[in-house]
Length: 462
Image 1: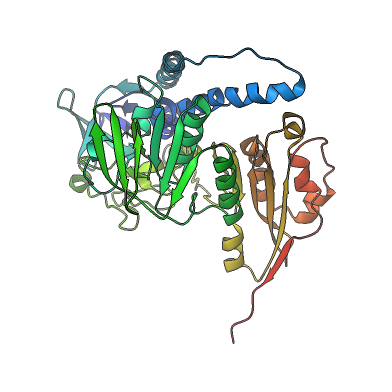
Image 2: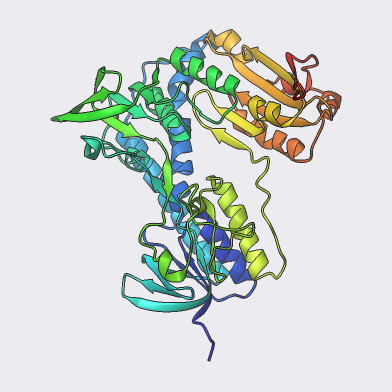
């Protein structure tokens, strides 16, 4: 009789957990995946995928406005929010079915239940109170929206989860937050015709991004009619029938028919039984503490993705899940390199970035060269739209290595995905210069910027 019921028990059927399960099963492991909600996790069900579908749809109004400059006369169009929601739901259901089928084809088994830890080798399914023993347990429960302090009226506030299922398009929505999710939904709702106000506590949106990116995105969003109020927070939300009054810390108030908070997400670690299994929490970020191979403080338990609160991006969770399976079941140690991870904000305009910001580079390197250009994209020369693209390279002035690339504009994410390969390979500015431009494109600016717009030399300490 086998010592354990299964070789691997995965808690969480999101992108990271699914990848780990499939790869482990491919190595011959007996695998069970427990998912309490829907297969696919946050990204597929109520995150990246439906968000991107909403973003694509919200671009249509601008495309119709721009068409006049190219000779098109388009009759007045109408938009139907319920149709968008229904078609999104249909696509998400298709993807969920594909995720389920791929797991089952790999030989792994799915159980629809919340699973909690009983000890370092045992999980309990809450659906039927059944206990299953496993040689290894992988926690991939992801994260959940965090509304912050329990202010008066917090019960009236929605998160991005509920935004995907609203019965009607808000006429005016107040969104608190200045990161990925807040700005992406600001652009989405504005694109479909909502009046949007963004509230952020800091001095500018997109904390952690390059300062030029932050300033450029804010300016472009404000030109698109989005109101951005910084240096304040929501202190109280009042409900009046179907409408709301949002009171701010600066003493002002805003009337709207929807209020959304997108101020961050926290690791989904509550009530998992971590203490029973000896799994420690990282005191710095609230996620499960893990080493470079995603192993927790319990030798038989690993954790990947947003539940560790390292780099909360779906492709990172997938890479970590794959590396875990290779290391534990493939018998070859694979450690994920978290440096130079490309990321995108599907705001409007779009942001694509990889590597160090200018501030980060100046703190680490003695000489830093900056190459920066802002220009009107070719489409705007005909459409007449008031918009500009930002391209920026951060370069080590001593080695000539390109340390970072930051783009704001159409297709920024697509461009940066390719540039990330060069940055990861430690390409130099000379390598970029030696590459012939592809004309006419916005991206050609990356290989034609010859003169630094700024040079920073760090003074030696006296």
